[in-house]
Image 1: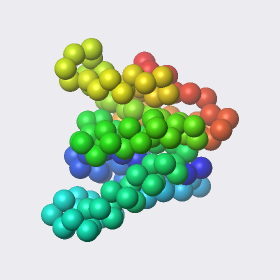
Image 2: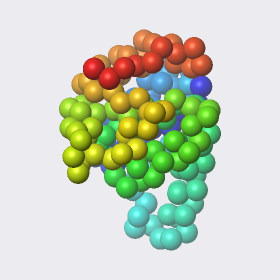
Image 3: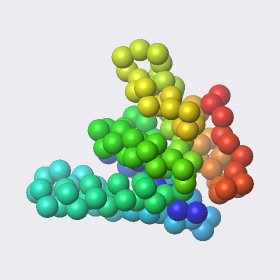
Image 4: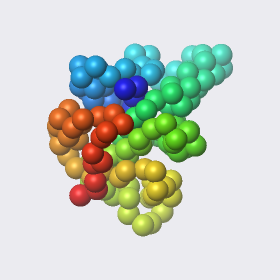
Length: 144
């Protein structure tokens, strides 16, 4: 299965850890933005190249995991995942669930019917994704 992990720079370490677990289970990362990190100071051509690669990777992924909190790019990628939802599972993870509160902090797209909101400690998310069968016959992770 092909996967993509979306998050802000503050969660890059978690994204790497999750990516390594999924790859060790035989899954394929569609684009490794973590290898180059933030490219906003590398010029317009480089930013355009990364934007193209990231959106193509989200489109081609069968599993998209958004680790909150995320930045503007995370939300753009979430929009792309929803727009191309026909071939994928979309998980939005929060450690506290505060991003899902019905106030000005939330994003309405977190509540799109194709998105799974998961609230649990990060270690629990890793355990669940490591032990469940990921693919077309997956059992959905439900919000706690």
